[in-house]
Length: 209
Ligand code: C5P
Image 1 (cartoon, rainbow, N blue to C red):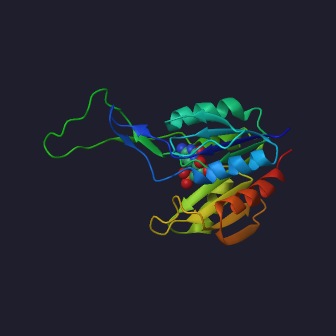
Image 2 (image 1 turned 45 degrees about the horizontal axis):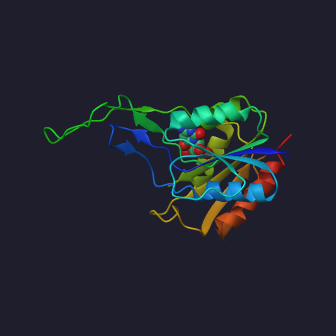
């Protein structure tokens, strides 16, 4: 039985015991992909950042909070995977020194130093023994940036969507472009995440060994 690893949701990066940095990801796309993969009878593990969603039935769930935790959870399971779909909105940045105590409002100004999180997808691309799917959310230069990411991260497929305002997050009808490693582009308009999940799975499975 094919093993599919899906990541979903945002990560949270701690600033102090009370606050964190995150993003608007709801996790719906990744959960939809996991649900459809399971419906096809695959062995599905979903590695999820914090979301309000119910785990699809029959899917194994691993809950994580930070990008570093997600990295560990994904790398550990990557060796056995036939296909990895990185739908999570991993935070690119984390606080350089998360504080142990609550940061007080002193002097009206506070500068927070950030450092980059490891790029999980790029690491997965280096040790590739599985079909690998990445996502690209862009506010400009959609296809050009997506293609660049596909090459840099050694992906089989990239799913690119353009952000207009805040509409994409949590919404069901979206426009996407799927580019594969041969440079083939497929554009989809106003499709549900469920329909797109199946299109992505069909394409990704072509790249499994
Ligand atoms: O480079 P960018 O963050 O736009 O790439 C998005 C893709 O890379 C997504 O598939 C996301 O899950 C993945 N990613 C990652 N590790 C990061 C940042 C993004 O795996 N630190």
